[in-house]
Image (cartoon, rainbow, N blue to C red; front, side, top):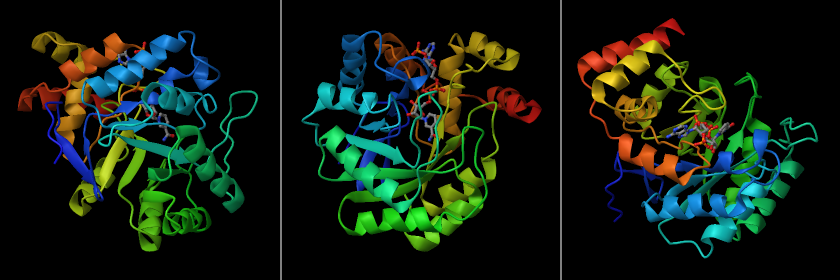
Length: 290
Ligand SMILES: NC(=O)c1ccc[n+]([C@@H]2O[C@H](COP(=O)([O-])OP(=O)(O)OC[C@H]3O[C@@H](n4cnc5c(N)ncnc54)[C@H](OP(=O)(O)O)[C@@H]3O)[C@@H](O)[C@H]2O)c1
């Protein structure tokens, strides 16, 4: 059984127990998630620090770089500790301009799964998210064809568990009618709370919700209410934002991104703040006014 002193404790994804405090590897690639990092050894050190801190959940994708973060993960951590679970996503490529064109036809998805296995040096991918929508967010429409393709790859033993990303509540339900999912990875943070109802529904089903951009992503969270609560608690706004997510619902898993080992340590150290009813009421205003 996995025990951890990381804030939030653990969560079970299907048959895999992971720390709720994970690490999102996207920031390890070059600017705008294209090309190699300026500091290759520094990127390897961040990944090694994540594992040294006891994190057992790393989020990645072949689209980051492209391929850069998966190569870094393999270089830094392979052979992987048995407790480490790497979560990847398929369904988008990169173009020369840094765009994220969809690649959800069956052939592209099969290729993407095999590419991820090869780049990460794995025989089975622990969890694959089907990325839907686009850079602006979820887009309504059936996911049957791409999700059935991933379910087939799961039946072939190439994928242990499935999830969806940038999905509407209807798409989540449609996926669940095809094959079980263990997580939904959507954009969500203190200021962006479109998925409040979905989070509660998934919590009732024992399905994880993994917010991307937990710190605001490319536009860091900024709010006078957040700064006021942070000042009162003698903490950073990032610590408050992460603590709020862990406290928001037990099925929320964190994958904050950073290219800095110091920031990673700071985030781990700060994410366990107990927030009072007064703090929560003040922080709730941020999402309500966004
Ligand atoms: N499913 C999807 O479509 C999707 C989309 C986007 C992201 N994701 C996943 O979600 C993960 C998290 O998203 P994200 O990394 O884009 O956004 P994020 O976690 O909200 O924020 C990352 C930003 O916060 C900064 N930061 C982190 N800790 C900090 C600290 N202690 N002090 C100051 N700055 C700090 C980072 O800069 P430094 O590098 O300087 O620390 C980086 O610029 C990604 O890594 C990726 O795995 C998934």
